[in-house]
Length: 147
Image 1: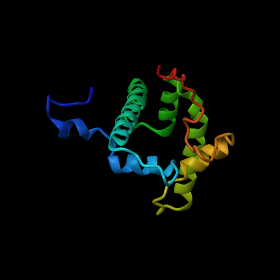
Image 2: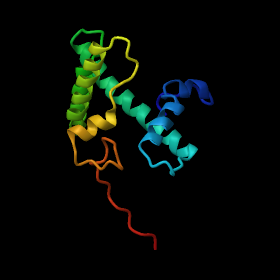
Image 3: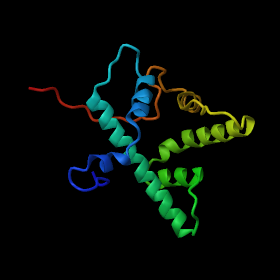
Image 4: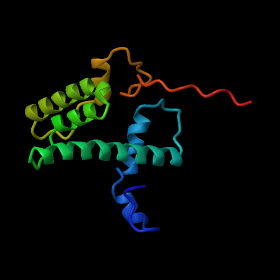
């Protein structure tokens, strides 16, 4: 990956990745109880979401730098998502950010975050409860059956 250190230096390579236990927990939460997730799948998603976060954050950082600001805020992230073509998720994320800020105001000692799945479903009720994630609207080309 582009974030890797010297060849063979796996500790540096993995420093930028989200903790795999957190990624696995999020994956498990969105799947039926009887579904198992392979180690390879967890690692793949770990790399993808870490790269996605780096991509969005880098764009937000560039914008802050051009405005001579040192702090990236939630609006910067939402603007970066829209600028990079992820604007179809911005409404859901705006609602989530608003609920997060409200939860911080009402309980300064709150450690829990608003439920993203509930936020997604309240913003877009068409999402199936069995697939509670913001990527449910993505359509992927179907692969032809093997011959």
